[in-house]
Length: 142
Image (tube, rainbow, N blue to C red; front, side):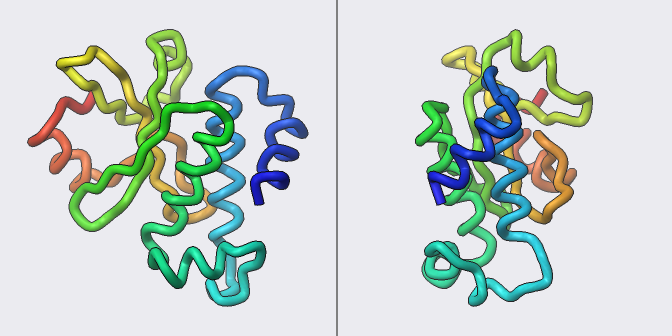
């Protein structure tokens, strides 16, 4: 799995952070999407889905791959969904699409990009409106 992800990053020539993040996000989105049930997935993903559940497994996999690529990624929970937040810099934030809902840690002055792997076409940095509202109650969402 990690080998396949590293091939994806090399194949798309992802040299900067946002490119690597987007490549891995797309890789995991495509891996967990599709018509096949989770039990038919290969390379241990099926076991991860059975153990962690279909909602948490994609986030766990994405966080692990991002960490393997050297990113500062962690899991976060909001309402009934699990997502990955990855730390980015101000220069990276300026390159994000307008719909990206950044999480700003006020005390530490850090920016985090939320990554919610829902289906193959989930946009980078998108969180559902109800989730954004819930997060806004406990921290700042840009």
